[in-house]
Image (cartoon, rainbow, N blue to C red; front, top):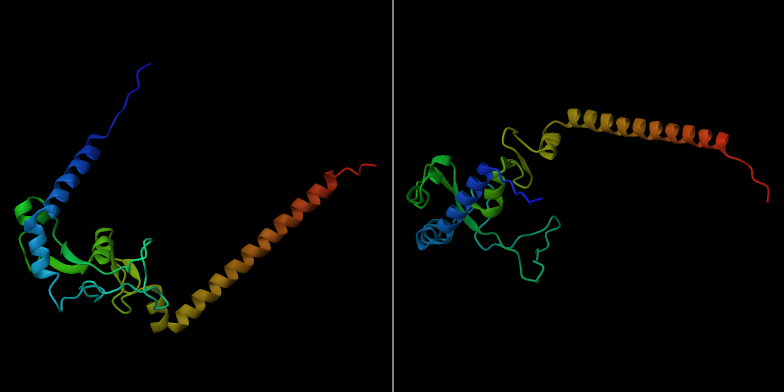
Length: 183
């Protein structure tokens, strides 16, 4: 029997396209564009407000490090807001203030996955249709937040009680089938 390898043609097209665009980002034209617009002093990410080479902090405010011990830093790049700019290298590497924005690589990756930073706290990433994250919404709507938390705790208690009753039934069932062996 012959080993047959089948591959999805669309997947091959996507991989080839990504390789081609990766080559665009390795060329001097793209690197100069990023250097001229994203790596100049005073430029910040349009979503989270971080600067280029600013150290990344964890939730406690401590500086984050890579596995090799170096400090993690924010890196600003150019985000293409319009998909038509991905058609050719010329469109991709030509600055267009209306259809491009400066953002950090984290916000760029989140933007590409269909999310955005919360406009209130700028910490949590939310779905692009949402207005705020859950924590910011809870602060602005305390009564609904209290009701939601009460429902969640009641649901957890109900679930715990149900599991306990199921375990008790299982124990009773096991007791009925247990055989007392003499030694």
